[in-house]
Image (cartoon, rainbow, N blue to C red; front, side):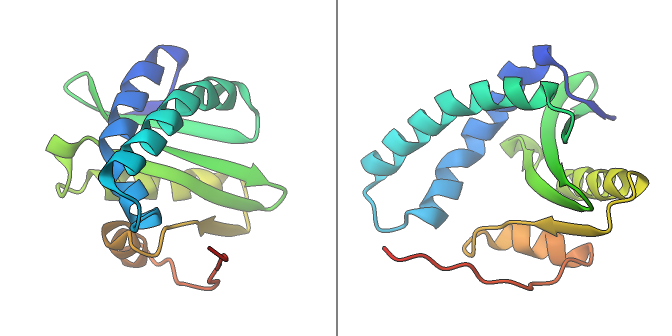
Length: 151
């Protein structure tokens, strides 16, 4: 079951986020040492909890959780700007990955944005996050922008 996230979900959301954050940071900061990546992840996890609490109260942001037998096993979020919606995140607990749950959340979020009359739906993905890229392509997302940065 997918439902709107509430404040009492923050701990579980952050727990699931922390499971995937190290891998995500490895895509983003591949040349750093494992220790440097872990330090960055720990800092991000602490900031993430505050961000979720703030986002849950914002009118232009929408967070959902996916439950299996009453247990939160995944979450997703979107952000709205005028006629554009952006998928902020889709995370599934490690023990539940590769079972179609990410697809369920992403479909739910895109349908929710369509119900809000969003004209353009986007998602920002890290270039190295192949599983997420495949998921998005499966649901009809196409690459349209390459953002680069100077190191």
